[in-house]
Length: 114
Length: 114
Image (cartoon, rainbow over all chains, first blue to last red; front, side, top):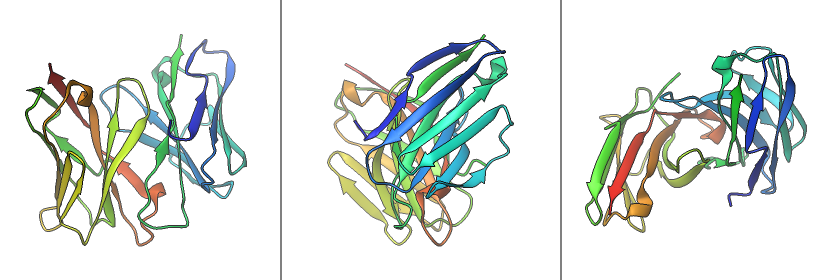
């Protein structure tokens, strides 16, 4: 257990569905992240939140919409996804006020878009 | 954009042997980190080495860093079947050394045969 919990672990959705991924951390960290991991590709950083404020959006399509209501919770709202969006979505957190810190990852949500 | 490149992409060894994985990167870094990922799960932080360090040990892990060659290596000694996983290097650039600036490579898939 890393202290970062993601739900659901698996999700199958149609292209017209709307769903949300949830991430929760109990580590007292102030920064949270969404990563996408596709087969045979490096991890792609999607969004960064620092003290609930979005600080980075790495050219992610608008069909992915993040929400960070507080520094412990992070959501990724999904709508009208494409089959190529099927991937493992990983949430991570870190203590951003310190240097030389590592990221703590959740177990991921395996998303399949049909 | 991808910063670290791991080499080899895949490595298969017998239990008890040592495993060496290499990582090369392109720009100057604040620190370099190694992570492990079991199939379909989240990443787990293994070790962090600062840019002013040359070698670091943690249990059966030994990490080296050569900033002049922009490369790092991860050595796992006396490997076990349970070490089978993907191993990623990740670099942090920028003066803050913040984990939100982590950039991952594509990983090395290590298989340890019993």
